[in-house]
Image (cartoon, rainbow, N blue to C red; front, side, top):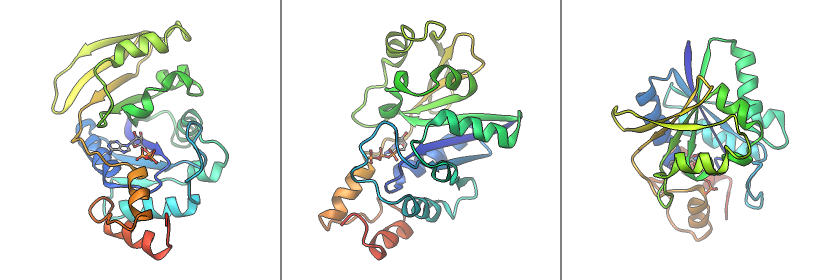
Length: 226
Ligand code: ATP
């Protein structure tokens, strides 16, 4: 089995919160690599401040260049239109074959809307999920929320909490009838978002140390977010 992580998002721009989270999860789950997949158009977000995909892809590539376990995929950008995770996972499985075990990495802020995602049932039976904490979001009631929001719409999907204590891992939520699980992990909490970075650039404030130096240089060179 090849165990790989997938991290979807707008990456507008990529920042150290994304990188630390990916690296931590490679270690916790013994993953071969994490594929960072910048979306073309996010299905659940405003597009107002979204810069061209080529810039977002370039910054993600620069940010991950020094880590052989982080790779950036143009799959969603090349597919065009709204980017749905289920389509991306299906495409990867088709490309790599049955030997692929995927871990979709997502912040609890994004995962909270799971019930509205395209192909929820196929997603939860076809891929593990690794849900990370984010400052300002409560992850303690996740199982209750899944049973409240997802199960009434998809009665086959029921969620149970399984205790598990490994390093950094908070707990595992099993999905009845699925070989896959949802892992809720606790990563070093960083109150950083792309929104905050865009805001700082627009205000002429520093972003040093919030993004890798190559990303900062790229933003300056192309006068992004001003
Ligand atoms: P924006 O502020 O523009 O909404 P963002 O910072 O949330 O962007 P995204 O590209 O939308 O970044 O996020 C991609 C994924 O990374 C999401 O699953 C999100 O929850 C997660 N993520 C973003 N920032 C952090 C962080 N600081 N710590 C952990 N996970 C994060």
